[in-house]
Length: 83
Image (cartoon, rainbow, N blue to C red; front, side, top):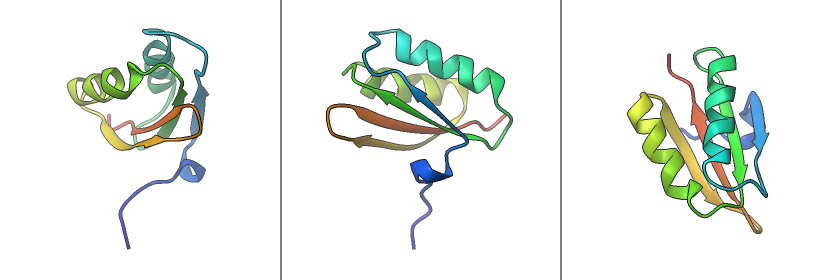
């Protein structure tokens, strides 16, 4: 059994497909601010920069990166707010 959280467990989904950098990250930051500790947020992004930018920001901000997965034409980045 693994300790991963699937999209189904995400409290909120931010669909930023079609948005370009820094749009997906800014939408995630807004969702983090509006969420409580322990909540899980999934970001859908078609911008290739999100695959590196969002995980770097998550680490710097002290939250938890749950998963980065390639989907059909976009990336799904799942983050848990820790504080």
